[in-house]
Length: 322
Image (cartoon, rainbow, N blue to C red; front, side, top):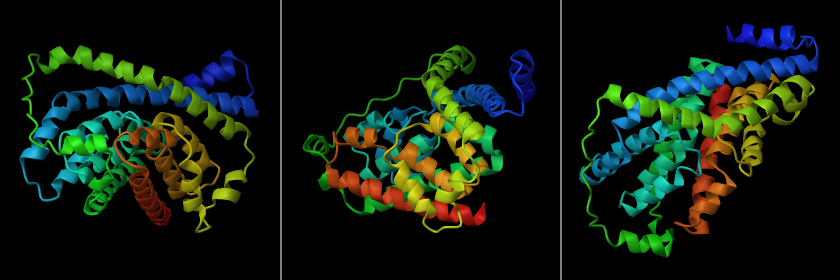
């Protein structure tokens, strides 16, 4: 239905020839924009319901009051997966976790997973690559958060936190406030959840439009063979090169998924494209700048280097199995 609407708008109403580069690019733009916005709204509603019953205060209390024998990394990764944040937006919660006395490795699990797996990424992946690839991406993103957080936690990196955070950690007896019981039923909360879902769409709409616009331009105008030449899956260095090229960039899932879709359409191996996306949304220079508030440059370098290595390994594995 969406494709028929896009065809009607571009080819019938606007009268653009379907065989031209312009017609192909505009059709791609209209179709993907509508599809992603619809999917994003639906999944944002679902995630809003989940978040209403699993707030951050409850997670902090749970992690600090029980011995979970490693399950805390899974819980932190799952919480990161259901929070609609990019790498920079997740930093305030990361700081809150550290200040609240939650182990550093657990906070890293959240920081790694939050920008990689959220309703934006899931909605766009489902509409772009189908549910099979989406499931692989979500599971691998959560596993990356768990393993990355565990490895970083075992490195005992607390000494590299900033003096401000060190002082906060010396006061571990922080009074935990009990979360007040909700006064509204689920039905009563739905209008607010829908409002927040619309707010998420407004917040990422510009990224969606820009990202799909870039994707449409590539889809319609970039010569066939361009990406195969530089990021071909046949070369062992394609995945590391994709990660290196992506780290200096910054975008959220809404902005980069349409570009990744076109990369794949142009012949780039799916694992290479996914590694590129993970690096763009999970590792960024703005994120590093904000992290300087809570950690020194050595710790930032260790964090970025460790996650980049894991993303490269995942990219190679994806290229072999997908």
